[in-house]
Image (cartoon, rainbow, N blue to C red):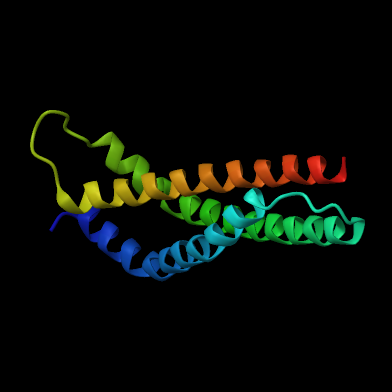
Length: 130
């Protein structure tokens, strides 16, 4: 096993637990976020205030998710850059290296969706507040 592959194995072993938390955290937020965004705007002011409070609380949870994803991406950045520097396009590929690149891609997509939902919450709060 090459040194780079050994480093990938070690890194994945250490970061896999964090990845489980990211996926579970995202899976827990998604249904509620979807519900909050599709919920009709209440007519009563106290109900609107409750909706805004829930939107703000979930927005903070998304901030935590974004920070967690960014920390993991920063941890994986040096290894990812080394892998990308050694990619041989058009030839065979190393499964371990491709797997790490797919994990990084998944994290980037999770980051993009979390930021998108955060922005949707911001717009929804403005709409509810009138």
